[in-house]
Length: 442
Image (cartoon, helix red, strand yellow):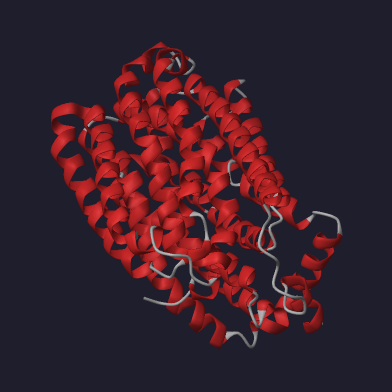
């Protein structure tokens, strides 16, 4: 049983060879296409939501979605990147590593969803009338955490098709639920009860994948109970490394989503809904590069300083800059899809699209830093950017409302680019070194 499990995760086989350009392109295509299609489906579903309910309901939904992001972040415990990196390098005990991650994620997702739910109730007394629905909605963080764990196993083996298809199934289910809302089949409280089904569909889709790799994964999952009983050492090892990375992701989550919470408290839910619509466009744009980031990470982990960093970064910019300019040019038409009232967010969208290429560069720099073991640098940078973003939002929102929040995002991304470049200068422009040095702590 253990031998089968190790084989499933790479324990009895040589470390996977570095990805060829063809495989990297194929993996990028799968993830980028899936992310883009999923975001477009989500975009269409959100249009249905905006047309089905009032802007106040949309603002409530924006706050709950933001809360779910933090709940999923807590449930993930920053283990996905660590799992992909270590399994791609050829972990000595892959089944033990995965077992420890499973137990940690299960506990963290339950506790994280509960804590965020309590926090939401404390911050927003307006949710008093839909408390049971909010609790059910936030419980959706648990199946999502489990799905991401299974996706990490596929990604470490550079099998991106299965995660891509599972994410599409998740988004398709979400669209059908929102379509029902638009057709008037149920109100906003019932919608919140139905949405957790999306994460369950994603997990089930991954577990039902067929083929040789799917069979190996099934054997690994069946072997996990025996490993869980003997995984405390692996859990301690994971927690030791994941703690700092979790701090980075928590601060990054605050950095990207605190504007919604501040707008909800400092303006109105209607204004928050307008801002959230513009931010949804930025989320769709992120799908253009998210797949590339995920596909290239296993190669960065193996090759370390030998990776062609400049080529990798510029390849993404060739796509991101024209795409951002295109959104700016057609901002009125894009926002008009949600309804005429959302045209008020046109200026917000311009600032967010100006920041979009910078978000891509910062995300790739973070990828490189994790692969190179520079998590300490990430902690310091994330704290600095989170603090700056909160300060700018508090300063600008009272004077410029939702536009002030967008300006704060752009300014912070400019500062982030400068700090990342300074922190990674010895990596980005240093002579190539063996890939085995990539994970050395600094």
